[in-house]
Each structure stands twice: as C-alpha cells, then as structure tokens.
Amino acid sequence: MPSLLSAFVSTLVVTPPASTPVMNRILFPVAVVCAILAGIRKKEEIGGWLFYFYYWIFAMLFIYVRDVALNWRAFVNLQLSSPAARPALYLAAFPRLAALFVVLGVALGLLRARNEEWLERLRMALLVAGIVSAASVWIDAGYFPDSVRNNAARLLGMVLWLAYFHMSQRVRAVFVVHNWQGQFDGTGVGPKGPFLSDPR
Image (cartoon, rainbow, N blue to C red; front, side, top):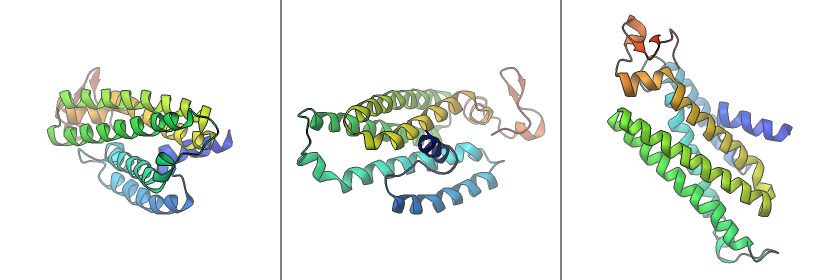
C-alpha cells in the first residue's frame, strides 16, 4: 500500500511514474520546470493545472511508447507460462496506448479551438481512456503483476484529470465562457455566480 500511495502522489504532483529509475530521473526535472512554468502562467488562460495537464499527457505517452519500443521483443517472442499471455499483453498495452494518443490529439484540438464542443470531446476521450486503462490494469493483475502498481497510479491520475476538466473554474472560463480575464476584473460569472477568486 505505501508503494502504491507513493506512485499515486508521483502521478498527481510530479510526473506519471515511469518503469525505470532512469526515466524518473529524466522526467522529474522536466516536471519541476513545467510546474514552475504553470505557476508563472497562473494568470494566463493556459496556465496553472491546465498547463500542467499538457506536460502530463505528453509524459504519459512518452513512457508508454518507450516501454513498447524497448520491449518490442516481448511482443514477437513471448515466452510465458500461460498461452493466453500473448493476447493479454496485446490487450493490456495497445488499446491503452491508442487511447492516450486520442486524448493527446483531442487535447491539442481543444488548445486550438478553445470551445465547449472540443472540451466535451476531451472529457469523453479521458473517460474512454480511463475505462481502457482500468481494463488494462485488470489484465495486468492477472498476467503481469509487476506492472500493476505504476499502471494503477497512472489510472488514478487519469481519473483526477477527468474530474478536473469537469470541475475547474479555469476550464469553464477559458473554453465555455471565454472570459478568463473576468476572473481578475470582476466581470467573470460562473454557473452559480462569480468565479472563484483564486481559480486553478
């Protein structure tokens, strides 16, 4: 349990947990720089946690693509005890990777369009990616238990980002109301009155 908690905190605060210490040493300083930039850009439309989300999704994809690339032999010369291990590996790895590419594509589309339609698309993409990731963790638990901790932590991060895009006042101000500066001049109005004074 402590190890899962550690990975979970890493997912939320620093970076998605990587599969090797070398990867963590690479991603950690990048995550710190992005966190600093997110704070500096707090009053910009794409700042705060919204800015950090884009780092997070790129980091997630980088980790998964690297894992597949470095372990490609496992996909073509799988030697495991169960005959079901090969399809299980494919089902655990590739749908999850494809779902993340979709999330990235939609997130970039939202960054360009900045409207509610693309926001809804991103919410749906994150929901589907979360479901796919949950299925992958379930497969991991049955066939690849060593992968469960990191992948479960990444899944929890995905769930929290989904909640963020539903609940964030910044997200609503930027993509729905289109009045982010109203957060600071008092003209911004949310669904239940004025926006929070310190939006994220």
